[in-house]
Amino acid sequence: MSRAPAVQIFAAAARAALPRWDLEGAALALVAHRENAVFRVASPRGAYALRVHRPGYHDDATLRSEHAWVRALAAAGLDVPPFVPTRDGEPFAKVEAPALAAPVQVDLLEWVDGEPLAVALERHAGDGRWLRRTWHALGALLAAVHAHAAAWRAPAGFVRPAWDAEGLAGTDPLWGRFWELPALDDGQRALLVRARERVHAELSALPTSGDCYGLIHADLLPENVLVDGACLRLIDFDDCGWGWHLFELVTPVYALADVPWHDVARDALIEGYCSRRPLADAELERLPLFLLARALTDVGWMHTRAETETARRSTAAVVASACTLAERYL
Image (cartoon, rainbow, N blue to C red; front, side, top):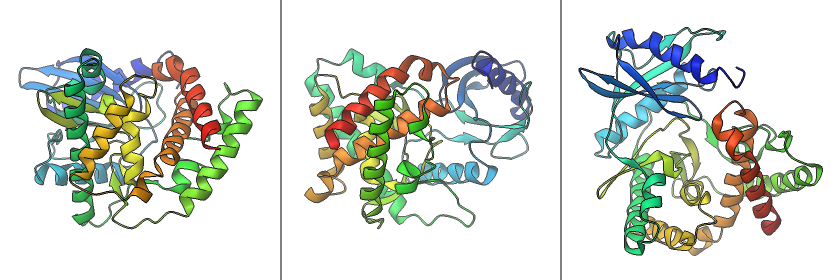
């Protein structure tokens, strides 16, 4: 897809999918366009979140596996948005839309209340007590998710990507070959190539046992956490897969490196996590490694999602951050 019509193409697919849930004529409003396009559906039956998936990103078995884990989390009492099956009882629909060579996957979730953490942080930036309480609660919530994953037996046919050494910094990372981003100059490219080699080598030496590695959300940016009073809800498990718990922990604070309360948020997050699932000092010493790994994946995302407004707006800043972290780590 070219950049200009991407959202229009997703919107056409969303409208084509509405009858699969008997929601013909419901109003659609774009909420987000990153990995996929998310629309708010307003209907007499209530409000829903409709996701139009990025073409070719997940096959059907991988998407069914996301649904299976989210259903299991909900059954365990964790507050995650419930999926709504189609009128035929299917977990998602596949619809055609103009300019798409193949049908695209569309699923529907119940709309859940809450303000994105990214927005709430702007309102509470000067409130140290709120910041510590919220980030501590988020850490404890992540520990609960990881504890569930460690005890859960995935069903037959379960398949999700691996955010391991190859997925993060191999020759063909999950979010793209970040060192091939056209916006990089020669010096930046050489630096990120060196960083990739170092990160890959160090990640390859780490254990992947259940105490430090397992199913994770994998993209827990502040936009994917909803704040509803004292309640926190995790949304958008589109990138969930196998990975290190530390990669999960660095993701919410990675984008906050330049805010004055970054250390408060990071420390409260870790304290909250350790209150439910202890981390050894040797593990915590690896946080800079995973921060760099996260930064490299974000450069890859900007490279392979250039049609999105996020990429057009943020590529320069993401590259600068990754290069700073790479120089510091190397």
